[in-house]
Image (cartoon, rainbow, N blue to C red; front, side, top):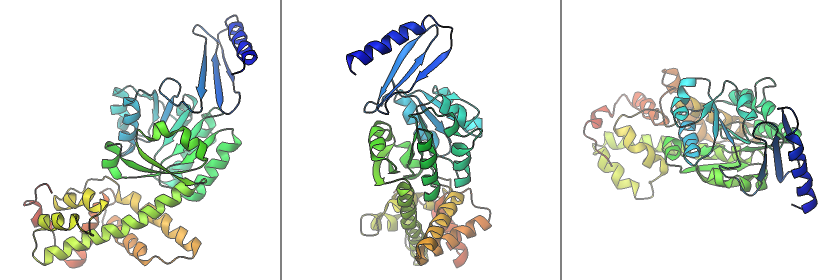
Length: 358
């Protein structure tokens, strides 16, 4: 900082000691943000764009579900100050016990944060927690702040949020993730980022605490990447479950079967994450059927917009919709095995008692 500017700022700070106890905010160049507070502990806070760290960056987190809870915990463990909001306060209790501060609106989260993360259920939830004029995060975020939406949502909504944030003097990144509950717990998520590349680079210290970030292009491109990811996963899950049904009918030991194929060309992340869960009849959600149906629906709408025919995607969505119709929407995506068992009037249940760890 030039000496004359530095001198002027420090004179201003000294002057504030003489004023009543109020708050004053001075927003300077985009690369350097000053927050000046007058009161009993007047201080000068300086955040450089290339130095995001626990000492100069306050974080907010909206949504503490299956994945969000673990992701938020990594940031707390790294020493960051976290303000959190979730519609069900009890879901944030573990984070509160770790030191997070719970507030009752997304706006309140943003008013106490420099960077706000959100990971919620549906595009309608994203719109409410970020763009609502009364309680949304953007309405409480100071100029220079950043919103990072990690929900799998609509690319057009990501562009809308980016535009609204830019108009407010803020930044927005769409950064949906892949890796499920295990990836979230192990800080091994794949993060697909869309927006300004310089902002993504600035936030790398945060992303690196959650997994590996891939910059995919302008606003909305992170969401398009995640939707493509879901297209691949949908057919992979159908293949995994159909393979197990086939092996069962052929009289194979399913544990031996999965071990044998996992090191060959049929090996996949879906097999690694969900193969043993299916055999152990563990259908608890690492990722909800309801949310996957939402994702595949967005994919199909984008396909319609593009004039694309993806029959494998359409088949997978129909099978997952059948799970919802049977009241199984709150199970994990590996519950697809139930739909294929019903179609074939058989069950792998008898295998479960004989299965050990792969």
